[in-house]
Length: 104
Image 1: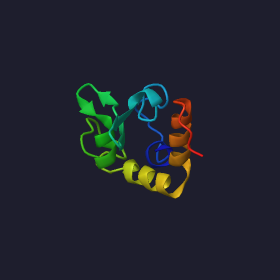
Image 2: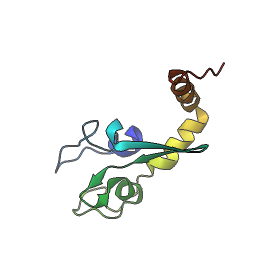
Image 3: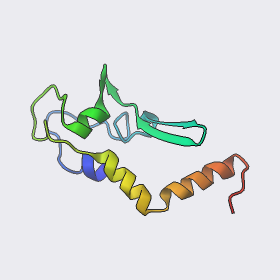
Image 4: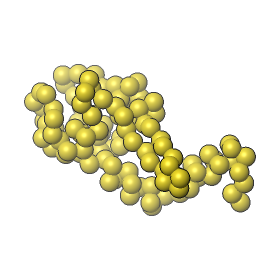
């Protein structure tokens, strides 16, 4: 997310929230477990607007700037990075260990 969303340009009209209320803030990331399905979703909203969808699609900005209308599809990139690394496996193991479940 950092590379696809935050690093592509420096805003001139506003200060980014980043880790303090922005897309990348862990408090705006919701993790749900339903049976064997794990889902991770950004719940960052600007009033009634889903900020993740706006950034992903480039549609829905209420002001004009250099990236308005240009999609920044960070979800697919994140998914691919997780597939290619061991981060997800390590995170799952750590979570299971915290619950007293041995994985090795």
